[in-house]
Each structure stands twice: as structure tokens, then as C-alpha cells.
Amino acid sequence: MKSPLLTLPGAVPAEGVDEAVAAHYGDLFREQRALADGTGFVDLSHRGVVAVTGEDRLAWLHLLLTQHVSDLPAGRATEALILSANGHIEHALYLVDDGGTVWAHVEPGTQEALIAYLESMKFFYKVDVADRTDDIAIVHLPAGSIAEVPEGVAVRETPHGRDLFLPRADLESYAAQAGPPAGILAHEALRVEQHRPRLGFETDHRTIPHELGWIGSAVHLQKGCYRGQETVARVQNLGKPPRRLVFLHLDGSEVHLPAAGTELRLAEDGPEGRRIGFVTTSARHHELGPIALALVKRNVPVDAPLVAGDTAAAQEVVVEP
Image 1 (cartoon, rainbow, N blue to C red):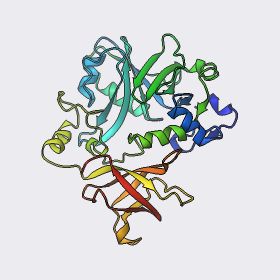
Image 2 (image 1 turned 90 degrees about the vertical axis):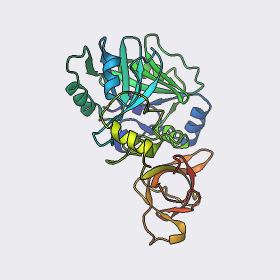
Image 3 (image 1 turned 180 degrees about the vertical axis):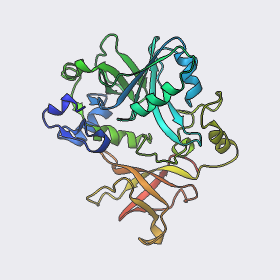
Image 4 (image 1 turned 60 degrees about the horizontal axis):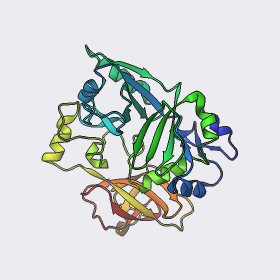
């Protein structure tokens, strides 16, 4: 469903999976600076929302997720993954338990497949799983924001800000008093700056958690069995991931950003060199200029100059080789 905030002055719709919300409201860099300064908000109402209730909700989710949640305190935010049997990432959940319900927001359009999997794993556990996307909208407040949080709204508070599970009917009235809106492009630029991976952007059909630095933040290494744990343990104890996430500073003289999927090569090999990786997300940052996240082969030298298509790129290590 398209966000009603697309009717705000200057709103330009985003593209791809984010098309239901605004890319920006007329001034990308101003919106980024506002978020960096702790003001304004981001409309993430296109994201899927899943609620899990019942007395067994935490113990049950603990068996399915990569994160340790069996004794998750009420109000503490966390994130978790669901893996395939081969350890590949299938879902990413951003969670909080409010004392009676586990709330999770997920990538747009992925909630149906997630719920289908969760429903198939209920067995005798006392849990109920519901798709709340139609009546709950996610609103992001940046770190340092003093915007009021309505009473009774579940909140995920992290070092990067607060995610509000706001009644969708209240979205327009809340936006009117929450400060200047910032589009998804501003939110994405800060995400890239913070080296935070996103499902469907930094992942493909064979991505494993180690490649993206999701160990620790979304994968707990001392918890019990879950699907795909064998791969996680094997890579952690015996092997190394085949790829690693890097942060790129892109040549600022280029007019166009390299699109997702743009091939990376070693600069010394020229345009006909072998492919050593690809761009996953690129953005224009208000201070850093053009930047990107990318996946490269593990053995690429960490100080090697790269080329993204025709654009020169200098890499910073996110995941150690």
C-alpha cells in the first residue's frame, strides 16, 4: 500500500521495493543532515509487520531464530535471522517484546513467506502469529530525537534510533508533529555509512551471516540448535566465508552512482580484469560524497584500489578477511 505521506509537499516516490514511500521530499542532503542531527523522521510504513503472541512466544522463537531470545527482556531491541538448511539467509527480523507481544518488522513483501514458515513450525507451542502490516506502520526516529512517542506504542530503541510500531490510522497526524520528514534515500545513505547490511540488498541466494558481519548482532554463537546452525558453526570454527562486505569511497567526479550489481575489478587489472565482487548499495552522503557497500572475494587485498564499472573506488574493511 502506498504511504499517505507521499502527498506531502515535495515528495518523490522511491523505486524498487521501497516504491510505496518517498525517496526524498525535495532536498536529499538537508534531510540527511536533519537525521544526523537527531531531528525529523523517516516513513518506513511499507515494511512488513509481524506480531507473535502467546505464553510460549519467546521460547518458541528461540528455537527458530539465530538470536538468543528465550529470556529477552521487555523493551530490549534485537535483530535475528532465519536461515535455510544450508545456512543461507532467508529472512531478517528487527524485534522487540513489549511484555505481551513480540513485534518484528521485515523487508517489504517478505512477511507472507515468513509467516508461512512460522505457521509450519508451531506444533504444540502456545503461540499465535499475525500479519499486522495493514494496521501498523513503522516510523523511524533518528538517534537523539526528542520527538514524542505516543502512549502504548511498541518501540525498538537502538544506537541508530527508534523504530515505532505506530497504528497506521495515526500516521498522518503523527507526521504533522514529528518534525521534518526525511526520505528513504537519506535513511539508506546513513545505513551505508554505518555499514549495516539489508536483506535483499547485501544478500543474494547464497549469502551466509559471516560475510556481512551479522555474527553477534543477529547471530548468537552460544545458543541452541536452529536451522542452518551447522553452517554457522563450521565457518566459525573451521573455515572462512568466501566473500566479505566492504565499504567503498567512490570517485566523486562521476555523475552517476554505480547501480546495485555493478561488477568490481582490481584497478590494476583494467576494465577487462576478472570480476572480484559487486556493488550492493550505493548512495550520496552529505559529508562523505558518493559511497557504497559491496561484496568482494575474501582474498582481495584490503588495500587494493578497485573499479566499480567505470568508477574508481577505495575500500574500507567491514568484515575482516
